[in-house]
Amino acid sequence: MVNPSKKQRLSVYLEPEVMKALAAYAARRDQSRSLIAEAAIASFLSPDAAERQEAATTKRLDQLDRRMTRMERDVGISIEMLAVFVRFWLTTNPPLPEPAQAAARAQAGERYDAFVAALGRRLAKGPKLRQEISDDINSDGSPGYQPNRQR
Image (cartoon, rainbow, N blue to C red; front, side):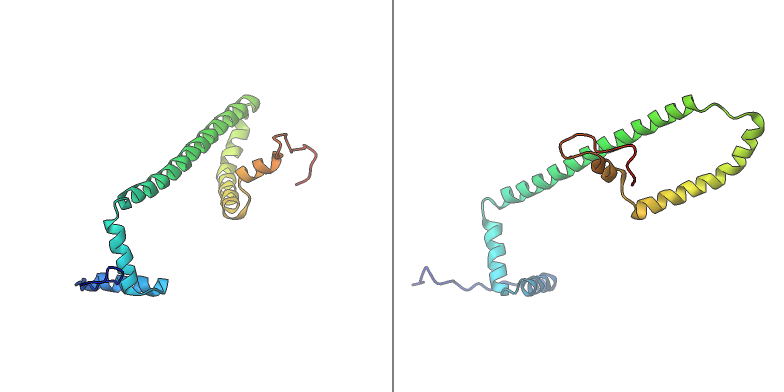
């Protein structure tokens, strides 16, 4: 008769790749292969294993959904900001006279290249606008920006 508190032996045949993965996982966790295999079988046979997996997947999808919502909001704000700026710029800056337009076109390429280089530097190392905005707003919600403040 088998003692119910004593573990029983089971022999299984594993594919070489599965055996390598089991051995590597056991070594990383500093556990025996038998213990890892037993836990895997118990998890596989557990009635709530699928529910736990589904809960973990749902949690991750919810996190991704919140990130996407924030990104959509940020992109919408960026588009509106650009549209307001362009409208403001077009209404406050008169068109250049004909002789000055030729000179402006000649400098446009150089100025654009300088703009792209400055943008690249800012993206690579500078503070992001989102960080500057949060720095300009106090924790109580009052504006922290003072026009005469030096940065």
